Image (cartoon, rainbow, N blue to C red):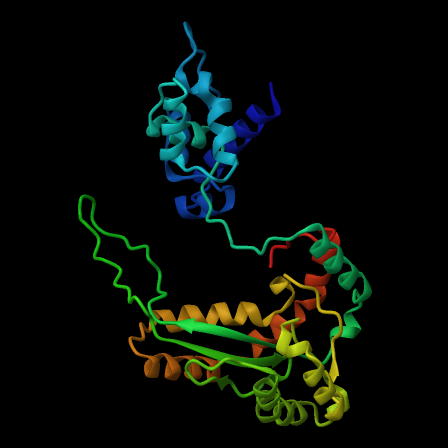
Length: 334
């Protein structure tokens, strides 16, 4: 028996046993990564005394057996869904329906997952990321770091998925051609956060504006949280306004220590990126329609951040560094 077949049968046995133990379909789906059809099918076969192995088939192999490898290869490339896979195979002269593609995917223990967006990493990027992670793979280094970043928030970014009765046309997701947006700057650490700076509409941030932002929002807040300017250090990415000669000289005059050599294309290393995502989700649920509402909601959600969340995010930094080392500079799960 092939390892793939053995794995499929093992999953069937586990699904049946969990169902016998009284677990809900939702719990089984979450633990095994299977769908409700899979659970109901094999539990029903077990109740009928037919077991969980594939029934022997006589005659010519079915389409699922003939086209299995082609379907799996196309689906796992990640560029084609079930509909496009069926169309591609039909263009190649292999007659197969979308439903058959779906059944074949389920029987091969494949499940659909939304792919996360990751920046493109060249060999140079990976090398810089790995070098940075190796040099800073020390938990003590990441104590008392203030993580900072800018971010954009826009109106109309709520979830586009909606559940409706079968046969019903879902309501439209209303969009604006030029959706209002705000650009903000903020910083977080294990002890709290800075004040949130909201840039004026249409502002092009240069080194002087960035320095003014740090002066008004970072220094006082960080000194208050750590009681001593020498007790904390600043994390900022490699954006031009962050690393310009003017900004570097200003940081030296202010006696602000900086985490040097931050690698490019590394949002997964900055915990505040996860916080922006959380805030963006909460703001989206409130459905702001104007820039004023968006401005207000972003500030309110920033003010409502719980300290325990900041602790969890910042304490993940050593694990992020280790993940980059383990991935040899490649993408991580963060």
